[in-house]
Length: 68
Image (cartoon, rainbow, N blue to C red; front, side, top):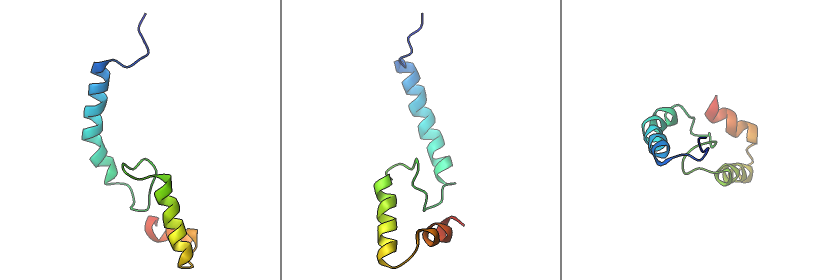
């Protein structure tokens, strides 16, 4: 019976693949995208909305201006 816990070899392969693929996919993300970005969080996305609101900009305008 095989354990469902990843082995050291599995973790090494996963880390190597992450190093290779992350820059490829990162280039396709829009600057306003916060999901699954390294060093970006939901708090960063909320801060963009808060800053936009203080400038009287709607959330829809923030998204469409950068992700269009």
